[in-house]
Image (tube, rainbow, N blue to C red; front, side, top):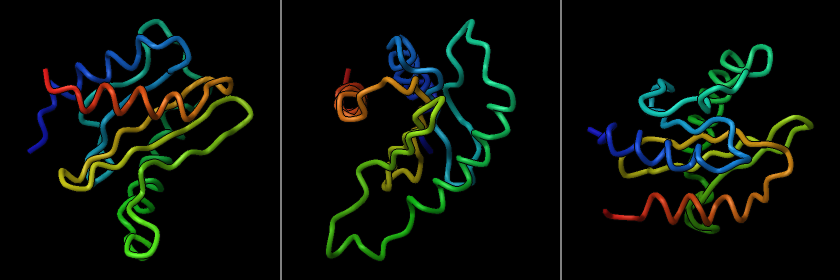
Length: 123
């Protein structure tokens, strides 16, 4: 069972980043178990519904293993839209995903490094 308190703390650290709008941990069934939208943020129309659809899509895409042997496992999946960047980071051992919605100006590689920093910190 994933440690939701620890995951919630890590999502809070990510939400402190100016360009991040949403950071949440989703279980293998696509259910949000920690995190959420940045406090005080007004979500775009339908954000929550659209994020649920994205959770479902990313959950399915992240568990696919057909290219793992030849290309290695998925580190993250990113989708750049006009109004937002959506990034998912699978944690295969615990079967959870970190999902992030950020401003379109975000540097995806810098964001990925920040995620690795926060989620490998063993405090």
